[in-house]
Image 1 (tube, one colour):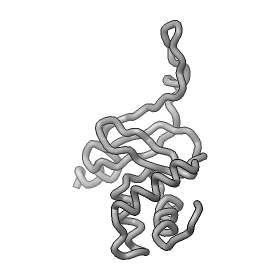
Image 2 (tube, helix red, strand yellow; image 1 turned 120 degrees about the vertical axis):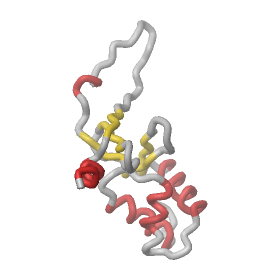
Image 3 (spheres, one colour; image 1 turned 180 degrees about the vertical axis):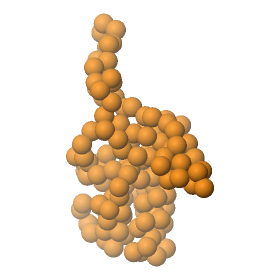
Length: 127
């Protein structure tokens, strides 16, 4: 991180304490606990600079906005809850390790998403 403003420190702290990849709005909500009146534009700008310097990595969520996490974390697959929309990191699926591609194709990366209902939503449904 280059210049350490109070806003950037609060945004960075949100990622350091996160247990799952965060959306821009989730980052703003968490960081706003430390810095009142944190603008969405500041969050977008800061995430952009952290991505550019390689401190964060983006997770493309099918049909939704990207989520972000600290760079260098172990590779994993993801689970998206259909009820609450939370994204959870899960152990990689061994089935997707080596894709069978047509001749001339090159695989640069892959991403696997599972969809269903998370444990919190399952518990609240049972009540």
